[in-house]
Image (cartoon, rainbow, N blue to C red; front, side, top):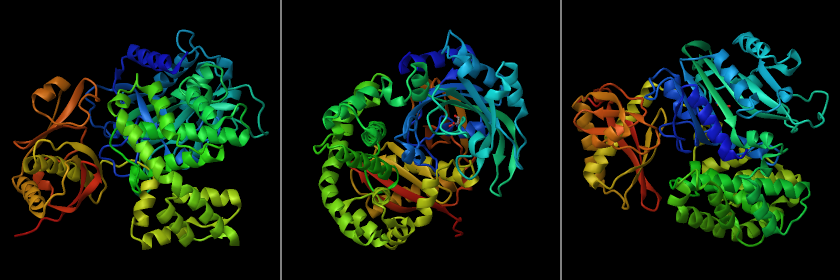
Length: 592
Ligand code: SER
């Protein structure tokens, strides 16, 4: 069974269990302050896990593109990836533990579906702690299905609890499914949850029955949800009897191409690690670029993209690739995925050009930077200043310097670099920490206000600049909104003022904000704008700000624009050719 077939079977299985199939959301989260990338299928569904009604109903399934930057240092082992495809099924206040576990079991073991040998199936269940009791309900279902006690393992929160992905939000105990590959255990302690490669985690059923509050309490959620995630690459590897994900058909051609470029036949351990890093990282980079919205930079998603490409280039050098090669690999990636993801064809030139530009930029800098690094390291230490110099002059992501220092046994303290970085005022440390911790927003009131303000801003921009203005991205933190849009000139002070005035007039007018459900076709007919009109599936929710704007959007929003206060643009700049970015805030209402 190949990846394509697995995806098809999974969706068919859950369709038969009355799930609506929705499309993958973008890798770049809309309206989510705290994460740079979509890390799981549940991510775009948070408002619905919190109780908002999903236009497609209470049972949802899909294949979601995910990026997990937190796993970057684990890449190189048998199973960790920065980009992966996740199969997911959700119950939004509908079925719970019994159905979820029974269906997972059926899909994994039934000959009609995956037909994996049940004897190799191990499961883990939440052991219980001060916040929540042991998950005896999940245990009971597994026992009923015939999984013997020896293959049910109880683990603490670290292993068997999912979420909240940020500081607050929906979360709960989970039960994870592992396949025993038959390898020898690495130690006496070896078991599911150990990374040695004996046990492969393929699926995670999360039972979202709690909401973690800002003061660290776990409140029971009114609505009981199920959020499951099955890794496509890992599952395919297990079904095909492979011992690493790099051997499956969506990876092997990438690895083969790199081997060819490096003229390696039988890679040793170090070489294998680099082959894996390059294939994982450039696959992720190609997927990020395929959405046509992010280019390598020193900020946010662009910085991660830059790190992925630059680390690949360095790994390439390590295995003897001196010429530019990233574009060649991106071509292989596109060829593998263009059938499932049309964005690879839509943005073909963009992907190849951007990856090549970045490689051109960094290849030269790398040689010089490595020499400089060696000089700096003569005293056995890389200071924060050194690392900052490597970053600003040679374009070394600090993580690369950290990795190099580790390899060479040099002392290096990243905090020193952060201080240095802060001094240079590129990014506040607080902002960076928040961003890199990752997490989901709670659907707080501030968030809703800024979300509604974003719709007003979008429409105001269209009125002032013209109908070509299209949303290219949006990100909201509790403090501010950020809106990227297509327009190819700097806004004049006059234009900015006009935009602000229009937004503020519409706030003062106290316009009603209304949500409706309709088909994509109806929404288009009604003149709704929307970034991902085709991607939400059949029914979409449309938010109308009375007499002013209409957008396809998942919300949340306030009920009336009068709740917003005073709108102010803080910054306006270019983020890429033809794309501008506005940061704006809502201030306390100005009393006149
Ligand atoms: N959110 C859970 C995970 O990522 C299940 O999908 O593992």
